[in-house]
Length: 422
Image 1 (spheres, rainbow, N blue to C red):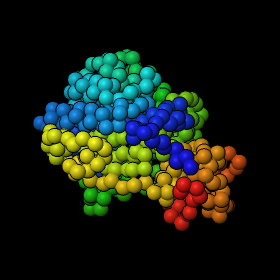
Image 2: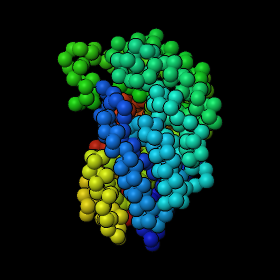
Image 3: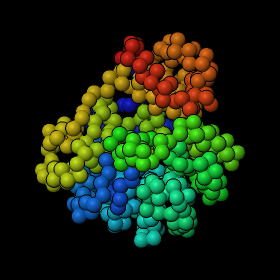
Image 4: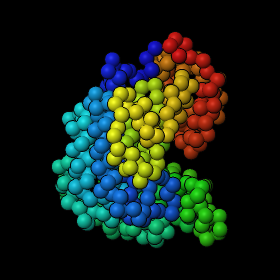
């Protein structure tokens, strides 16, 4: 039974081709540093620990080389520097990490290599050095093109700086750029949203990621909303904003290929497609998650502890077991049939293409209709799913209620018995 992930005798993940043409492993590199932490952010990121950056980058190089040896220099098709704010660290640090990656892994000649960035960092960097290091895609955290909203989000740039950063990236030679925007913000009007959407359409990036504000427990913004200092976001207005963007971007030639993502033709995020297609990936850095053949795991979250542990002697042998013995990996679990089925459905249904009938059969050895038939019929009858001979996918109405649909499939996955090797 083909689970979609194969292991060769050396224990290395073999190449797997995704819809975007990628084959091999996807590599995520976590850079946890920020100049300031945004009020809405609950990611594993830190401000005020700049003194740790040199030691951290050294530890990160050590981990990258460790995995390269442990996995017998596997093929890598996408690399993504996330955070945190990768553009906040010195550019020579990013250059060194890129060099370590290209040495430790067999990186495809046409690999997609993305770096997340803050517009406020561009004025102090020679962006052509990123290109020289092997980075060929920038993701710019614009979030809004309204200065008042940017201030309320505790962002450290204004609209002019964001547009200037995009133009600087173009002048440096970047031909693949993503812009992040947020909607459903407290006190954000539909007019402000329309203006931001019109502006990014005029800029014509290859890719756009549009995210609704989520109030994460424990964040300063969540506390401000609960205290009444900031208005509670209006979910109905957020839905109107989403539908407006969906229409405007479609008219402008952008493909809506995933719930929160649009691209010009053939410019999808290949790295994120690997996640959505439940393909293998490796994460390096504190708090990073990984999914390798039959195992998934996560690293400890503390950057200081991470630096200390990678400064010592690393054991030989199976890399997952070695890092677990040092408690660098805090969570290691086998991937059961239920997990793989639930993840495949939850992630794949985010894509506009949905779950393909032939791919489901190849992966699980049975027809999707035999596994989820009654649920598919129910959700189709509610107008949330489209089902045909090609597969199943969210309807336009289903996009707004995607989380509820995903939850239904995850719950149903726990009650399924798969045939064959499952």
